[in-house]
Length: 70
Image 1: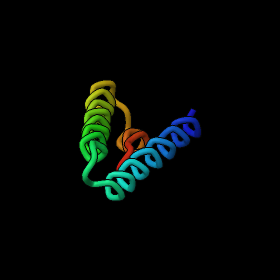
Image 2: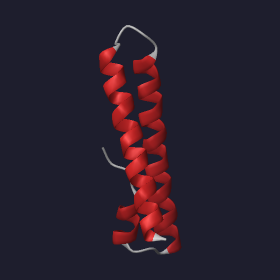
Image 3: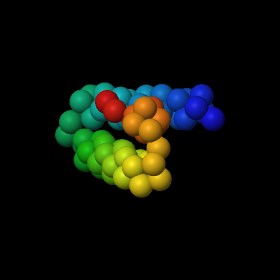
């Protein structure tokens, strides 16, 4: 299960990095706004992982492995 979580984190990180690159390529379009929304969604997901992990008593290492940090 840990390897599946790691794969999901890597794919999400790639998705976030790609959206950032695209927002810098075309700054006069709606893409930077979408990039901002995508990153805020990731931030909310990370906070939810932290809060639920602490609530259920997961170790800090396990919680840290599930976070997607750019």
